[in-house]
Image 1 (cartoon, rainbow, N blue to C red):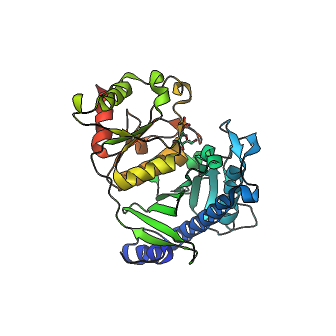
Image 2: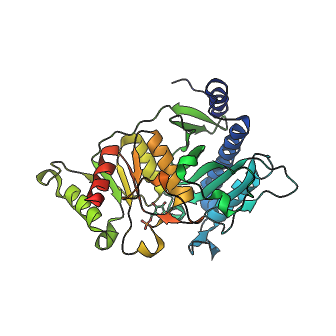
Length: 332
Ligand code: P6P
C-alpha cells in the first residue's frame, strides 16, 4: 500500500479522475483538519474539563455533552471562512448556519453530526464525526429547503472514528478509502483502498433491549439468527452493539455485518431513531460504495426524499445478502 497523504490522494483524484473540483477538495481538507482538532479535544478527556454535560438540550431534545458543543464549534469555525460553502447544517443546530457576510460564499452545502455516539464519551468508548456534502441548487437561497435532497445527490460523504486510532473514511462516489491520522506527521495517510464489505456475514448489530417493540419482520430475522446452527439459518451468529453508529458501521466496513436501528413501537411516532440527512444518508452512501446495501426495510435509504432537516429514518445496512433478506421479510 503506497502511503500517500490525504492531500495527495485528493489532488490525484481531482487531476486524474476529475471526480472532485478544487473547491470540493478544499472542503474535504478543511473538514479533515477539523476532525484532527476534534480528535485532540476528545483525547484530553478529564484533563481538559471537556467531559460531562453542557447543561442544555439540543434540537433533538437530547442532553448535549460539552464535546458535542465543542465539536460543532470546531466544524463551524473551520468551514465558514473558506469560500467553499453556501451554508452548513448540524444535528446540534435547529436551523442551517449561514456563511457570515464578511466571508465569500461557495456552491456546496455541508451537513454533519459533529460527535455521534457522544453518550459514550464519558465511558471512553469510540465516537465519531459524520459528514455529507451536497450542491446548493442553482439560484436557491441556502435555507433548509436547499438541504432537502435525496441521498443519491451527495457528492461526498465520510466519517471520522475517534478510537484507538483516529481514522477518516471517505467516498467521493468512486469507492471507499480509509486514512489513518499519523499524529507525528499531523496528517491523514492512506491505509486502505477500495474497501469492500463481504456480502455475507455471521455478525449482527441491534439494540436487543428493544426486542418487544420490533415489527414482525425484524423479530423473525433476529429470532432466526439467535436460533443458530439448529435453526433455519443453519449457522451460529455473533452480536455486537457499541451504541455508537460510527463504531458499528466501521466494524461492518472492516469485516462485514448488519446494523439495524429499525422502526419500532418506541420510535414509530418520530419515524425512527437515526437522522436521515447527516447520519443515514452519508453512511448509506459509504456502505453502498463498498458493495453493501442500506434500506429502511421498505425502501433504499438513498432514494428517500427528505421532508425536513432533522427527519428520522429506520436504518438497516451492511452486508448485501443479509440486508436484502431483511428487506424481503418486510416485503413478505
Ligand atoms: P441506543 C448515538 O446516540 C446514536 O445516535 C447512534 O450513534 C447509535 O447507533 C444509537 O444512537 C444508539 O442508540 O438506543 O442503543 O442508545
